[in-house]
Length: 301
Ligand SMILES: [Fe+2]
Ligand SMILES: [Fe+2]
Image (cartoon, rainbow, N blue to C red):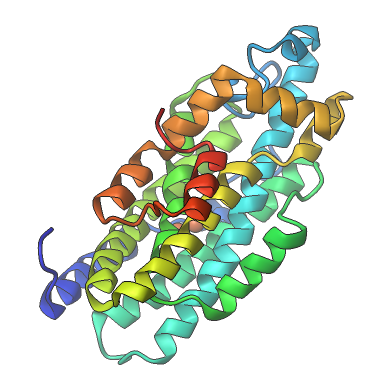
């Protein structure tokens, strides 16, 4: 692993600040929120629907399949807003202790500004979709709040990266798919362009933070990271989405979990971040961490 010195850190942040100035998008201006749905187009790439290829899928009409993907993209956007709010909280907390004259601190705030626009964009998209707002509940909601209020160092940046890289993989495919609704493709494209900077920032920062962390600190962080992976993997598609096509949440989630296509989607979405975390030795091997990672569905078989 290359050593990142403070000047490397400043150099990266300076480059990211310049790129932010050149490539930032205002969802209010870039997107026509009055645009109607395009008939016959899906809201996620069809083969990424969690029920694609199952007997339940075979029973759905074309309209119902499209409707299900509408709720699936709303679920992903709802989780996105939730994660971004926690991320903004963590970045602002970190900023409070930094020197405001450094590019590094200024970039952290610039990223908050990006995430502000993203959450507005996802919120507007959910309103456009006309679906319920799907977001984590119960223990997941509690843990998200806890991470937002307390996380620093490796567990903070690893949790950020898990959410950002999985979303990024899904959106890169969606933005290029002609069978996906144009508005969803535009939202995906804007997010992909801006998130590339965030991923770069978090990857470098994570590698740096690991070198500063002690062994016992890292042991605990591996467990938190495993729980974040479990949450992302299991809450990406909210079980309540199936109600939109008359399937109970229990039946829908059971079918999705047993669906080889969906299993493959989750592994594919997790591939890049899992490899990166494994390189940094952040995939816990203890019993609890291992079972959380396995249940997340993100690991390669
Ligand atoms: Fe974002
Ligand atoms: Fe981001």
